[in-house]
Image (cartoon, rainbow, N blue to C red; front, side, top):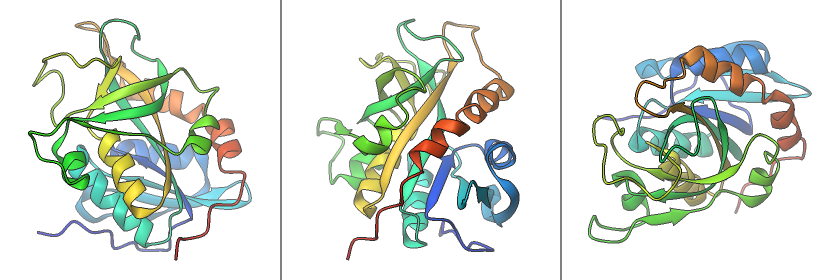
Length: 230
């Protein structure tokens, strides 16, 4: 079985990567002018639209580190030079509540995908991967900078042991590791959707918070993207 992007149109050098296809559609409408669908296979919707004076790709990956790594690698091969993951996470320890927007300063990869990409076995310590610092700094006003732990399963299915980081998710570590391997600048912005038991932020709340980052996204992508490495 292969999982590979076969876009219906070209992709931009800048991309927003999300897990949920619904979110890709919503952010394409919020961020870009005249968005058109560029990818439909396996339900992983992707779009291309005008973002200021440039084009912007918005691509969904589905859930988990494996699919995210595959899509990131394909986007890089298609010419994407900068990527921002706009995803969701669960809070750990009560420091952050549903609706909080976090800028990822580092990701601890306890998931299989990031371990495999880093050449590690399950017996090795988790890999810690950092995003591109310049791109991450450009999102400094979006929210606090925190570390995230990425695991293969959500806390609802596999609750423990609790990670030492204030948030956990499914794919940021694999996303950043795959981007680094592909020579792509990458950063991650996460919205907390689960806090204490019963505290859940609906998808509409996620979309509204991410859509509100349009000015910051424009500033982050204002500079010319880096040239591909030889």
